[in-house]
Length: 374
Image (tube, rainbow, N blue to C red; front, side, top):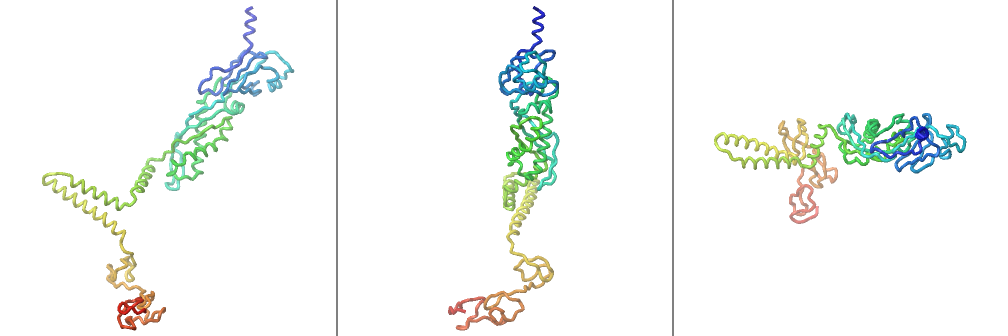
């Protein structure tokens, strides 16, 4: 009786994987020194697939369900072992259960800064990180490419490989997108979608389906972020001259509130007042400079002077323009012209009303005294 029980224990009658760890991808069913009984019960639960391997060669693959093993539902294994139809003797084979559930919250990130060329800041060193999720969708490819002959395989065993592959593809994606560094934060969704499309073929080579891919952050060097902050501040302030005047007025108010006594305090107050006065003068002069009249070039010395100047403040020469207006029709003519090429009026004579003789201004259309139309 004892011998019968020993022989019976060498035959496997039930094959299943019940103790699935949270991060376990593959489990090898223990069949060492045992044979599988023909007619044994195989139970494959949801989010599992069972793979039979004969002498290192993948044979039959079973999806979720309950099976009674026969030559009919083991067609590949039957062919490999050259069984006859209805073969019912025990047999040897390796059985692997592969988890097909989705593994979420898998982290990726740049261990070192990645170089990229930006249109605003030139060469940049950036860092990025995020998460992705994946699942096994082709257990045969997965076992061939990654698993080997281990007794189990977890997400930690492949995490570093997938993370490096992700960072490499993302570096290419950022370079190809030509998105300015200033606009990265507003394009995370678009970049994540493009990253998923770019990575999917690489995941397929391992038998994986990339379920989701997200970029959580792209960080820039400190000096670039400071430059971005300054640019943002200037954009918010708008008119810098108005802001300078406001700051000057605030400084004067704060100085007025400062109560001090003694000669030293008075001297300090005079110094502060002088400094503030100069700053305020500069601030208002800055605004006045902006609203100055148009400038022209002095025909004598070539210096830039105000358009309304009659004499150059640099060389003292008389500013003579080469244009003037006709005394009669107000057309623009050369300064040396004696007669207007438009109306023929002589330019060295004063324009008078032919009706009442009143002297008229150049370009007048009616006489201010009698109303005669010119």
